[in-house]
Image 1 (cartoon, rainbow, N blue to C red):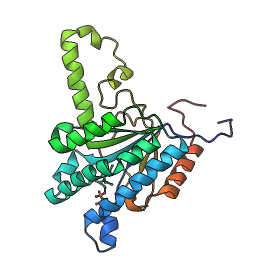
Image 2: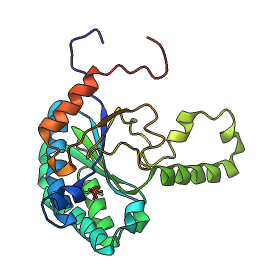
Image 3: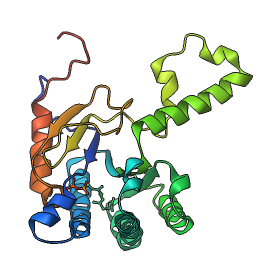
Image 4: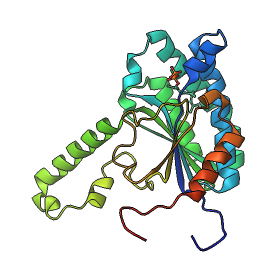
Length: 238
Ligand code: FPP
């Protein structure tokens, strides 16, 4: 880039990993890591607003995570419920729009109700959109999009003529949300784990050994600084 202006990603997405190991290293139960992970969520949300990031998305619970011990699943859902009620004022004060995306049919009715109320209450907030991916997986998203499109195409076969990738975007749960510019994964793991498979086609990846409960504002600023140094070419030459 010619300009000396800092390149700020429009959409940052984070695979929050390492809560369990962080807790174990301290001789505590895994859920203690999740509890401390909520503080990191608050820190990166605030810093995103401060830095001018417009979309922050978090992989909070995958479709595969339902296979964890029932006790841990229950704890995570409870934590989500608590975070929703605790953070209302903070989200309103910071102008944050809250969105949950994923297979919501698997969430219980009380959590779905609380999510709907918070989404509704924050819908006009314009500083940052905070997207929490809950019961989400990339393959699930692509499949549900394909089914929706197939149903529409059954009544309107011309829909499939000259179909472009961008035409498919609107069937994904992320319709209307720009693709992530930067995907961060904490805890030293370097894989996509069935996350934004379609949407992440041209995302920059940033891996750090820091465990999620320790990933706070300074660590996040380092990731943004690294992004600002990258040269994105989208398969072209410069
Ligand atoms: C990964 O660590 C973390 C999760 C699967 C859950 C993340 C959830 C939170 C931080 C709390 C709730 C979120 C919000 C948005 C309020 P892991 O358990 O896979 O850790 P490990 O790899 O060390 O086992």
